[in-house]
Amino acid sequence: MDTDVAIIGGSFAGLSAALPLARARRSITIMDTGAPRNRFAHASHGFLAQDGNAPGDILAEARRQLAAYPTVRFAETGAASATGSVDAFSILGTDGNSLSARRIILAHGVVDSLPDIPGLAEQWGKRVAHCPYCHGYEFGGGSLGVVAANGEVALHHAMLVREWGPVTFFTNGVVEPDAEMLRQLAARDVTVESRPVVSVESRDSGLSITLADGGSAELAGIFTQPRSRLSSDIGRQLGCRHMPGAFGEILSVDEMKQTSVPGVFAAGDVARPASNVPFAVADGAMAGTAAHRSLVFA
Image 1 (cartoon, rainbow, N blue to C red):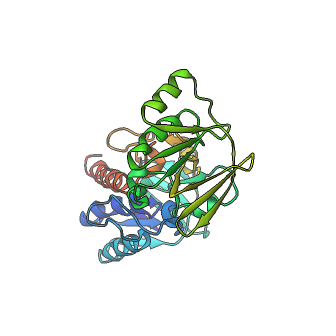
Image 2 (cartoon, rainbow, N blue to C red; image 1 turned 60 degrees about the vertical axis):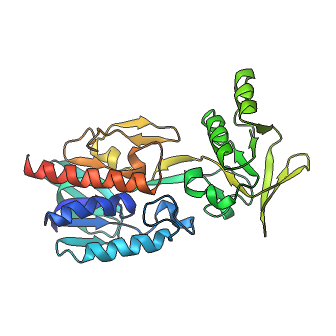
Image 3 (tube, one colour; image 1 turned 180 degrees about the vertical axis):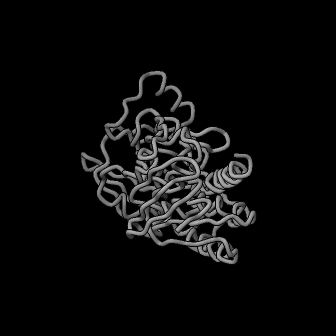
């Protein structure tokens, strides 16, 4: 099957990229496996006019609206491989079907690697989160924990999260604050806890944290910034330049979301170090518009 633009990934960035292309009556194929990164969250916050709505509901409505455009096609599959160059890309889906496309937009997202603490993963998207702007308000100003997972970035995370409530920073053997870092944390009234966290348990009012020596803490919620990896190596197969991000490798793009490979664009978590739904939607809109303009002004 031939298409003007193949969009690999059908979450917020991918669907947002599809809209300007659909409105330009370009043929689009959206390839998606139905496993968005924020599927663990009950609600999406900080997204204008959608604040508090379930991510799955927002995506379902977006798909419904896109389906009304006759040039949009959904393929319930991932991308196994991709080859070719501008105007002549070939994509093999994980379902065994092949697709030819003039342009590609990579929006397949990333996979998080949480700290290996029993009980933490079960609360991911509930009482454990990464973005205080997305979830901090819901913890009601209660006591919060920041569990280091990613080096010195965690120090800044702890100081930022202090805006949403009293914070205990669990260094967890990942980072050892020096004197200057301790001074900055103290200036933000952040408590530093060096004893490792050995388990997290859910309580009616929050979380109970057990420490290595048997100590404990009661918290309204936990923030952590896990390492992440790209959920697909399609970008590497196509020859796209990668770069280090704050939490893991990402694709290198310019301000128009163009990768280093002509005709290949990238949007959302695959191409930005800091992520949330509004950023992903904005990136997708730019990538879709840029991909369309590249077809017009080739």
